[in-house]
Length: 441
Image (cartoon, rainbow, N blue to C red; front, side):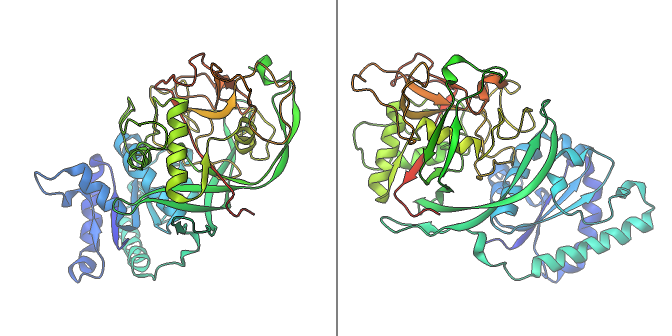
């Protein structure tokens, strides 16, 4: 249950935390509100677990934004992502305080309403002016913390075996870029999804986004920078509606499904080199990914499988025709590619495409159903998988690029087979699933 205020701050700004705590004291003394910050962690406690629990219980998040705050790797990787995700999907309220001059406009924080006038940060005000702002902020915190829960229209429905899923709305941020990869616009959009409950004890879920039917041009034009001959010839393809995983499959999702009854082969519950519950699972062979889908299908009564190449590219483009769904260029602020040194948590960049899918460019390559073909001569035009009868030794297609690859490899049309076969695996290979046969728009 989300019922407390979580304060996120840099330890270098602790004096500001103390002043805010002091201003909030009349409210906390009467237990009008419950406030948590890391000074509440007892000596000897597992501090990361304490913070994780506090994040999961936050109804209001107070961000004390400064250059120190924005420079903190821990805040950027462990506190902001779950808070911003909860703000998008669970109604958590973000209240941020502008402590000192900094580049907040280059971050996701800019999309949220500041708690006071941004013309001057707090440290540029007189003490009296600062106290007035802090008092007003405390009133805003009280108001938001006591507000009744918002309607659950944006909370995804959890479905059980053989139950027809009902779709619910969710919101997300979409950006557009220029040829240099610089963000030129940002907007909020909504789409529909259902949520598969994988594990009741640990709350592990799989969010499946509704992808509408459509017709698109598959492949890249000869003029596109970085293209390969295997991306042509361009051709129109009809796509039936389906659901696709909002993110690549994570390590915690893999761990749960690996415990489901075996269908064809055993699965290593912890195959990944980089460890983290919200990191994409990697070092997964095509056969492993197929077994995951088979177990999930058997457990839920719905048909899960890997996407076809056509489905993957259609879902990635999301009604765009540019090299990336962002636009003509890409940047390390929007995707995890060559500039990074390892996989990052799914949804880490807090931006999706027009369909509401995250991490379609970079992070990990994603397996597809199709056997590898050197070009699109003779490719299906109905979005189905392109399979050959003599498939024992065929390589499989992968899409999306990875943290190790250059931007050209992460384009919507980019495809590769790695020459490793279906039993091969690598630290840069993961996957995401699709679900077909359930009700779609």
